[in-house]
Structure formats: structure tokens, C-alpha cells
Amino acid sequence: MSEDRYENPLTARYASDEMAQLWSAQRKFSTWRQMWVALAESQQALGLDISDTQLAELRSQVDQIDFDVAGQYERKLRHDVMAHVHAYADACPTARPIIHLGATSCFVTDNTDLILLREALGLIESRLVSVIGRLAEFADKYKDQACLGFTHLQPAQPTTTGKRACLWIYDLVLDLEELQHRLRSLKARSCKGTTGTQASFLTLFGGDHEKVRQLEQLVAEKMGFADTYAVTGQTYSRKIDAQLLDTLSGISQSAHKAATDIRILASRKELEEPFEKDQVGSSAMAYKRNPMRSERICSLARFVMSLQSSGGQTLATQWMERTLDDSANRRLVLPQSFLAVDAVLVLYQNIAAGLVPYPAVMEMNLKNELPFMATENILMEAVAAGGDRQQLHERIRQHSQEAAAVVKQEGRPNDLLQRLADDELFAGVDLAGLMEASQFVGRAPQQVQQFLDEVVNPIRQQYPQQETVAEVNV
Image 1 (cartoon, helix red, strand yellow):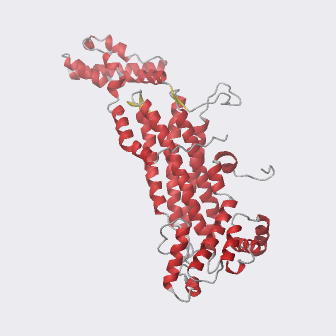
Image 2 (image 1 turned 180 degrees about the vertical axis):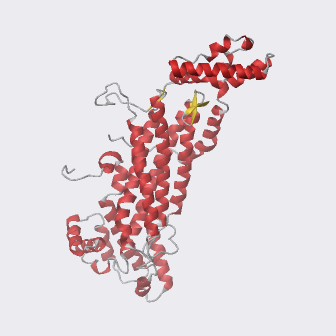
Image 3 (image 1 turned 90 degrees about the vertical axis):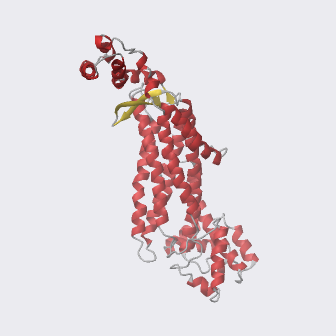
């Protein structure tokens, strides 16, 4: 760590070591060299004059990268790929003549990006499944715990804490489905040539179109892909990047929504994220238990959502077969989006595994609002006891308005039940019996169980032993 140079907080503070290493310079340029080895191996298999000695030399230096030498070449040549071609050639003098044979820069850059994108998506997939699993355990445990529901951030019909958690889970399930689709859809660029016509490879193989097609397939298979993109310009379509950034943004949107709910519930003292023994909530207010993790999720998620537009704008400005204005943007946007989403899901899993509910506070808050919500049931019971529906409705309206005024203007508890108990029109109604919260949550507990059985459990069975845990760094 250099204290006099800016460091990206995503790698210094937030993202996991796994994701940070995946986007490291070592990993990137080692993969470039793996692509050069794959190309040479495939060309030899199809008859080009490449020796086993040359291949062995290339393989021996895949991870032995002299970054100082590569940097010197890049300052001189102003071209990163050629700088690394020369650095690799210095380390492999026998193989120098056949490195990068017939290829354009995007052979290494784009194919490497596709490999890294695939692995990064795989790590995000694992983290998503882990968060879903942790939230499912919480939802199952608290599927019967009645709490106040909210619409418009105003008290509404009761739900259960488990049912609310299922709303968070389902957003992630939809994200997982989208991610799985994108992961399955990824293909190799392989050997497409300078403008996507494969002209250089056709020349290398003396006009043999079938060998060019075989070369493309062989290299793709060495990359671990079964198929290649049907057509490309110099690059694979930047539509792919835009779609992946949409997927990452979607995950961030889901996490932001859930973290915001947790922050609001923490302010109502109904639910808290985990708070460590020596954790400090505020430098000034020692009593504070700020929802730091949830706030950080929102902050990082907002960053990812802001990057989403770059992918679409880059795609839209790729003139003809390609322009280079994608390069600097992609160096920033693709790694940072993955690093930030990784950090978001590490935090989310940590929260989900340690959520602290306060049922007594939930019940108290629900009790304060329930009399208003129970008025329809009270009305029906009073009518069944022989009362006049219209008269009863008007009396409930009057008492409700007066009780609301007491709460809002005087800051006293809701006394609607007492007002109704004192009213002779409701003498035949069991008001206390109508206040049982479980009567007002509808099918919430059953919905939770059905959701876990039919939606979540199949996911958990699809990913057995899937528990990807990373430490929250700060």
C-alpha cells in the first residue's frame, strides 16, 4: 500500500480478496499469455510450423511476467498488447516468431475479458445463492411473527416478518435467474481477425476455410467455451457488456431496496443488522447503533447503478467495426461494477446471517395501529349482534377521528378500543378477541412456506453446499 498514491477503495476496503485477485494485473496478463499458448497450440494442431519446443517455452513463462519490462515497452510503443508481446518474446526467444501469429489485439483482450467475466459472474452467483439461503432461514423462523405492514410508508394491513423477508428474497431470485441466463449465454470471441473477417488466419492456412473454422473452435474449447459469437467486428459486441451491467445493476437495486427497509425498521427498533461487541456507532453519540452495513450496501449499490449507463453508451458509439473509446471506459466500469456488487453481497450475507428482530417492539407498534385496522371486523361483529350498519359505521368514524387526534395532537396512546368499549352500541362485541394479530395477516405464513418449498428450496438443491463466505473488511 502506497500512502502517497490514490488507491481504489473497492480493493482496499470493500471487495473480497477473491474478486480483487480475479481483476488483478497478474491474472489479466497471465490469461493473455494463456490465450497466446492456446492459439499456438491450435495452429500447430492444424499444421502450422510451430515446434513442441516453442510451445513448451511459452507454457513455462505464462505466469512469469516482468511488469517493469512490459511497462518500459508500453511507454515506448504506446500500445499495451504489443508491449506484452515483446515482454513475452524476451522471455521466450525461441517462440518469438510465432507469438500472436495472425491475431489482432482483441484476440487477447476480448477473450481474456470473457474468461474473467465468466468467473466473476460465477462468484456473484455463489454469493447470491448464499444470501438467498440465509434470508430463507430467517423467513422460515419468523414466518408467523406478525408486524405492521406499510404502503406509502404509512401503516397498512399487517403482514409477517418472514413474509417481508420473502419480498427481499424474491428480488434476488429474479436476479439469479437473469444472471444464470447471462452466464449460459456467454461465448468466446476466439479467432475473428482484425475486423471480424478472419482474413489473416485465412492467409495463414493458405485459403483453407475449414481450417480457419477449426482454429476458431479449438481456441474456444481451450478457453472453456463450447461456442463462439456468430459474428463480430474487431471486438465481441459491446451489447454483451451492457447486458451484464444491467444484471449487476439489478442485483444492486434489489440489495438497495432491502437495505433501505432494514434501515427504516432499525429506526423503528423492530429489526437490526448485527452489531459487534466493540463496534462504535458514532464518534459523538456513544449510544448510537447506526445501520452501517445497510448504509454501505446502499452507497455501493448506488455506485453500480450509476455505472449501468456506461455499457449502453459504449455500445451505441462503437462505429462500424470498432472504435477505441470503449477501452478506458471498460477498464473502469467492468471491474469496478463486479468489485462493488461483490462487496454489496458480502455485506448482505453478513446482515442476513445476523439479523436481530425485536418481536416485542413489533407487537407494540402493531398494537398501536391495530384498532384502526380492526374497525371493519368490529363493524361486522356489531351488525351480527343486531346493530344498524350505517349507525355503527358513523359511530366508528367519529371515535376513530377522536382517537387519531389524541395520538397526533396530544402524543397519547391510541384509545379507540376504550372509546368503543364505553359505547353502548358495541356492548355485544368481544373487542379483545378481535385484536388477535394473527387474524389480520391473511395467508402470509402459508405464503412463506409455499415460497420456500416451491421457489427457494429448488435453488438450494441446485447449489448443494453453496456457502460462499467472505469477511466484511471494515
